[in-house]
Image 1 (cartoon, rainbow, N blue to C red):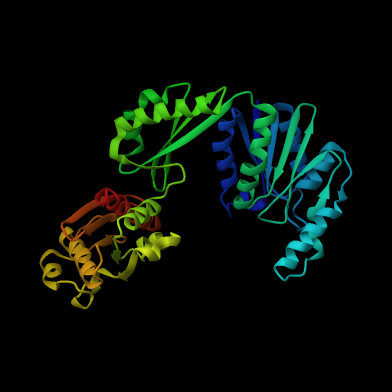
Image 2: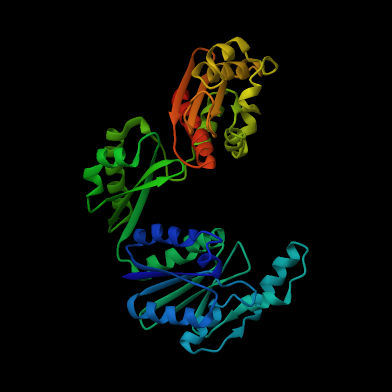
Length: 406
């Protein structure tokens, strides 16, 4: 079956926000065996949306819209779909009651404008929204389906995974599709593509390669008559890829590097402290995003390179001899923070985010790790914006820390 996505909102056309919904749905539709042929973006104009729906109706079986289901005047998706089908709109009082109960739960008065979100047409099935006040619509006619979902990505994704995807699977998909993602770091997309080329050309399972902030991901997807067989096919291919790629694979599916590191420290009853220079504390922030971080993470110090002094436990002779941007300096940071806070492991992290007077290249990352028995130092170079380099610094530190903990 052919699918089409229509993203609705003038803010998308003006570049004020990025269309995360279209990217998400583009990654999910193939898992249902649906071919995504078109993605359109339409502003908050009812007639232009009706015209776009008409084009989509002629060429696609399943049309998915996101956005335009809010309570304001420029939220026109419901009205456009109603006009497209020439059906009258009415207010579903049971939805109004749900809205009022939700607002009462948060000790708020419900604005009258929210009643608009309870609008329905005779042929639509209401899709519940557990994360907001904008229910979705499922309209099925003449072997076509229009699905309208809210614009906020958190609301849309939960509605998709909880209701829409299972409904599409049950009604229109003859086969079961199962997928799993292998997450790698420290290999470029080209290197990983060359290593896994034979799998990227396979038909079932299929393997896709994607560049992500935390590395390069490989998604393995298989189609079969049963979930058990689909999982077996995916597992077999994933195992073969693991033999080729090895330790560059750090996790799967919903794994995060900080989560994996947290589990390692907690299981081994070890503790951690970090010292960062010129990264704004992004490593500490990543670690403390994990709810259980207080069980192993003792302290994080964030300083500028020019402040690598004895008050932070630093041996200033090391800094004066080798410079503040050196493997020796970052190793000294790791050792100093470990000793000062009596932790099992100390991590030092330095980022070069502006042109350096020592000639160090912009985007240089230095990582030091002291586990009490050995001190390790790593130097890496990443292109990108200031924020991208900082993000890569944290990811690199966690990746190397995970390997050493193993």
